[in-house]
Image (cartoon, rainbow, N blue to C red; front, top):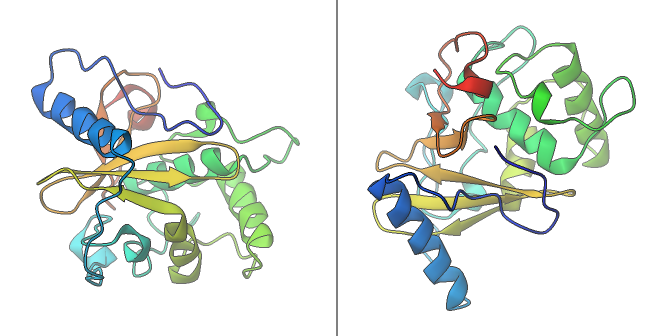
Amino acid sequence: MFERVTGTTLLPINTGGNMALRKRVLAAAAAIATGGVLALAPTPASASVSQGYVIGVGAATDDWGDEGPLSASQHSKSYAVGLWQWVLWAEGVKEPNGTQFDMGDIDCRFGSTTTYATKQLQARWHLSQDGIVGKDTFSRADNELVLFAGGAIDDVTYGGNDGEIGFWRDELGQYNFPVVYEDNEYLTASYANAPAEACQYGS
């Protein structure tokens, strides 16, 4: 399980014997220990919803500008929604009842709570408050991504207003995000329909 730790990236340390995951964690730790984030040439990201996944290449800060849209009527039950909900969690935005958007809200469903929280974040970012995660909203969000290059698989941290969350890009550039209540389990952020509770308990 992940806990909110302000100012600390949420990355699994107990890798449960998963060697690929262990290599990613160690690569990120090595980059942090040496005080460096590997600087890459500004290769523009080339992705879109037509590719079926949230994808990035090169510098992470231009990974998401051509993604989406996500909304209550567009890809509303997808794994990509789960990735976006982690952004809302890291930003600490409010739910309709005034409490913070929490891990219990990360359900791969773009319902009324996610719509409301998205509008709150758009207001903070001085964007159109339409509750749709389109190119402008995704592009603003990827400004908060930091890349820790680790070879074929890259760790990417999202640094929000209230916390940080660790994603990773696989060898195809596809973004993966943590399952809420399962240690060391990740889901690929595709635009395909996600089974009920997939974001919380795995697929």
